[in-house]
Image (cartoon, rainbow, N blue to C red; front, side, top):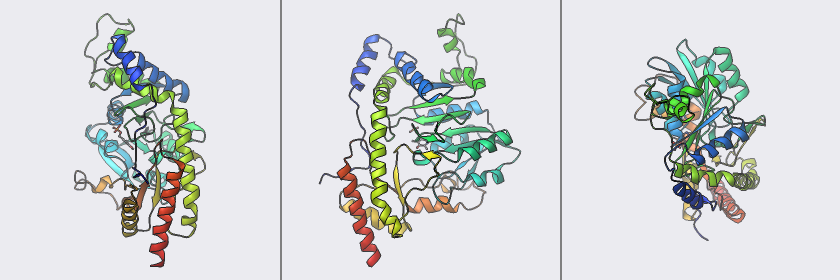
Length: 381
Ligand SMILES: *Cc1c(COP(=O)(O)O)cnc(C)c1O
């Protein structure tokens, strides 16, 4: 048996062809034909207001943080169980990060805790859709509307996920996506900001293009472009968008395969959950996933280590996930909130199983039977 990695980037076939086309066209910097084709795909297929490609989801989060207008003293509510960039982008604007706990039944933010964290200084809520399963968007949108807060979705993992049949990324004033090689569709590094609030469209373009009104210049609306605001060089080169466009073209096929693998995992591991050995992902019926991550929740850190070690001996790479940001070396001195018990629990017990486009159904069966072996063994011992 070949070793089964955790992830393996998949090449759809036309990546090099499109990069060559971009090079031949003579336009290889940003905001050319491929950038615009990628943006149009997301706007048309998912109904996002306006999309801007970025060099990473981290960049998209930084743009969102700037556009939200937060500064010193403003508070931003987000889960602690997330990637560093979710918090980093707002910390860079000197905002105060207010970490919320995860739910009991899955790592998404516990929406019932949000109200108690809101103060007169709260400006933004960031909903992170973990493993491609949307947070409870009915409740979170209601809170944001009622309290007049800006809702931002970190949809880095939620390409082609849905909540009540509405796509992830269509709920917030803004949403951010990642095309890092570990995500469902990829360009090595890459990301996108989707902007749904029309009031933010024109400033978004300026921030994207180094604080200049270059977009208006390209449209012939102004005769010279100049420095008009803050910003950075957030846009990726055409080479990145050309690569991504090849992935976009095959995204339907990628999603079908990943969901097939995910569903097979769920079916084969259900008996292990029924025996009380481990827990599987639990999400509301409103939330339909995208086959991004398949995770299990172990009983405790010790059981997880034994499982991961045994899988490793059998050439299967299973990996843990986030360390709670509220206890990170950068943040722990700043953290003044309550203990986040679910966040701590997922930090200790969540284990991600291999899942990638080229994985075979037999590979999933092998992972599941190996997992069954070690769990039976641990249970009789
Ligand atoms: C991957 C990821 C990011 C960062 O994406 P990059 O494109 O690598 O910057 C941010 N947030 C979440 C939840 C992620 O999974």
